[in-house]
Image (cartoon, rainbow, N blue to C red; front, side, top):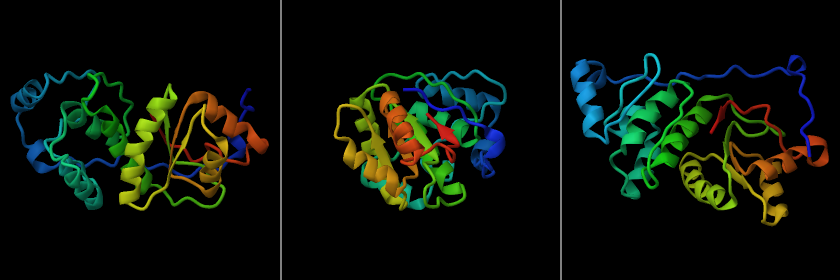
Length: 212
């Protein structure tokens, strides 16, 4: 299946709020050598790119919703992993990020937390508008794992999440998409399937403004 071409000149898009990050004074006042020491002492964080934001020391420094912070505390997640320390502020600045870290190092939360905050900062969704956040996963298993974490975060702040993947019953997936969702986790093949069903009336990507 192929997606139909899109004429962007005929679509009126909402303005996108991208830079949501305000660096706290404690981080701003750190001398450069202390920033370097902070990165080195936390997994030897290495960054490339111009004007990359400094790492955070706590989730609260990212300006996350208090409901998210409480949910993380209930799960025993109190201190960010190295990849979260650096990736979260960079993503909240609206920057493109390529991050490499070992399995089990907190990569999923590193992009889901900024995605949830980004979604909450955009204009509200209306009927027949697709998701704002899109996570593309290569396999069904990974999509389901990501969706578990995304659902927990979304539930904490009254957002809706959906998961579309091959190898599963399509009916419940379509029902969630038709009802509307703020974040969609999908495998590439199933994403194309749902976008081409019923002439694109199941869901669309017109509101998507953050992609992982």
